[in-house]
Length: 292
View 1 (cartoon, one colour):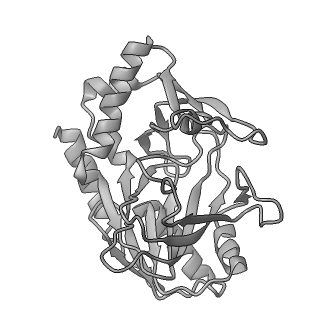
View 2 (spheres, rainbow, N blue to C red):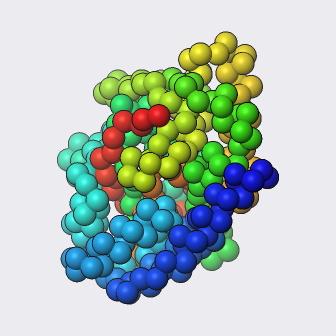
């Protein structure tokens, strides 16, 4: 690991030692994630609590709230503190257009979110973040954890030469790829998004650089041949998946809400609990276009 990466890790660990007055913040790892306690999300937070939750979100990127009893309106109200709600891409007729039901059981062919990814990167303005509220978990010992990866640190750990090479490169993101790679076609009612985003972007609130790659949706680096693009992207995907220092793990319990920053975090909902089931609701928040 080069000196720049070591200095970045030291800066991150220094920030995670911040003291909070109205909430308790217990880091999951020194570099990513925290459990938040002392807050009932079914009630409107005080201005001081709201500020501290927002500060913790920018510091830890993944926040875990245990033992929450939330109605759909509670869920949406809390998400609304961070911005306008992001509509579901393929809403079910008659359902709430801002709530996506996340469900898997013995009838499922795959689990939603299995594999490292960012939500909706093919959109012109991907979501700021997602709040997933799980109410039913697999039987004890049956798995179902979600992994997260810090994409600020993923960038920091690259060599100076690789950082220089990636600067200025862009990639095509195609919303149809997850279907096509399963041998399917997108639903006719799906307005398939397709957009080009930089590989290195800055967080819109903190200005910190991060690696913006997304295996399920990215088709090719625009400035490279297909063979060159595949080689570079495979290297970057492997870096995210195979570098444990980037990761934290959330073990779900009933009535847990997890809020992650979709702008600088990848996640992987491990589908290792078949034939058992899991159920929850997800609400997302509007974001902005990724900028270099």
